[in-house]
Length: 478
View 1 (cartoon, rainbow, N blue to C red):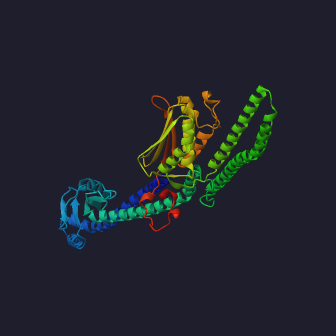
View 2: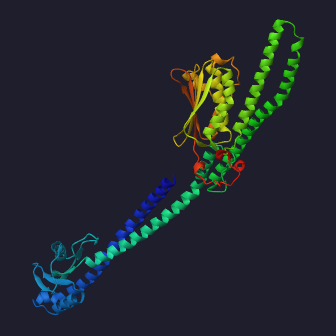
């Protein structure tokens, strides 16, 4: 935008300069030509007053010495021409130039004239001036002076170069002023664009300086800051409400579960015991939902602080943690990785919680005799993790809804879970500038893929003091 503004200012300045300097350049050329023409007409008029007796008596008289002196002094040729266009007296450098015949015709008709009207830098012919010689009211001849146009052309070119230099300086000043003015006008817009990107990336504390630029943009910046404050406050209130509501519901829920559990021994009817067991399961499920809501609220409240973790080591620890549950459900859970270590830059606990949600779903839906494989590899300047299961998988429409809050597949309504695991994983991955994708496996099952960016500096190549105690080393370096 700054370039467009500068170009528009520059175009306007160039048009103004053309409108001003074109008449000035024309006036300069006319002035230089008119000055020379006036001098030559005055000289020719004086010569005409001396040439009358010479033409009348047929002798050269004093006019010849005058023309010779004039030629020697100024280097300009002149001649006396009679009515029959014969040259009576001429100076040593006299040579008829272009346009002499036309000028002489006008002079012999009784009028003084000159040619051309103006001398331009591209004019090649001389300046020809002719004055009639009158004797007793009768035109007896004419005085013709031929002036070289080179000095006039040089003067005109010098003036035009001076005008061009002045115009160039004006354009340069305009460019500098335009850049400064465009910067002053667009600086708030540029900062507004940068702050908008920062807020979109999660920095909700970024604000625009509202004391820059013209008053209209200052008001816009102040309005934007107010809007950002309002939106940030609303988001904080919403997340605080979810966190507080989930937390406050835990105590009544725990008390409710204890009271329901105490009713068990007093129930003797088989149907009552069955309903009692279902009530306990519902309270457990509600507790899981509250825990998931708390986790989601904490994940959305992250300020995008980045840490470097060894994704391969994290994957190994999560596979080891879920191995007992997988064995209990007769599911083969294994880790497949060749890139060790595999460093990724994420928000805290992003890899852990995302893998927990994906492995939990994979083990849950693979069924007896199923298999779950967790793969870690460096890819696309980052770290890719895949969780592949042998379960029923999901359709294309279900894949598009899988990360929505509380969404459950139609055939999984009775499966334990709160429907928030993939939502939490998606929030953490997005806050880490990563990707979460899911696609059907072959011949069946589901492949959930995570990708996290690699750190700018690989921690594995940083020097480490060997004498440093092991418990003081970063967890990623142990």
